[in-house]
Length: 112
Image (cartoon, rainbow, N blue to C red; front, top):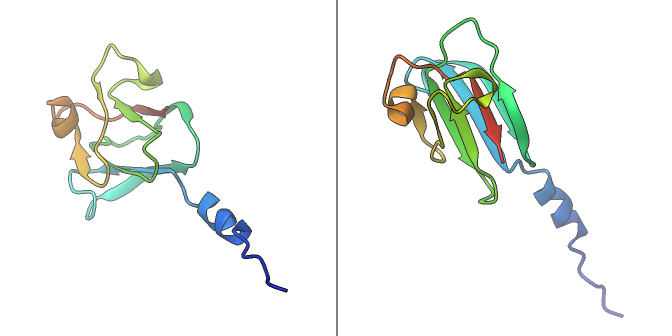
């Protein structure tokens, strides 16, 4: 009798992988800057404010699933009255890169 190959263990491993990761930094070079906050999940996340006493001026996003869109905002509560944009995956991007103004800071984000 032949044994049937089971995909169940493979499914368990793949479901543990995060669909997106997001890290915020003080400074403009993510690799050498101090990480202030990081978030990751395998599902969408409603608006989250980033509580920090320091200016967050760099972000690095990683998408493992094309079904998600991450937006970062210069205002709390994901207010579109300020600057907002979608970071590219795998790149360190400053507020100058995404908003055009390096004097701005990241204050909130959402994943849809």
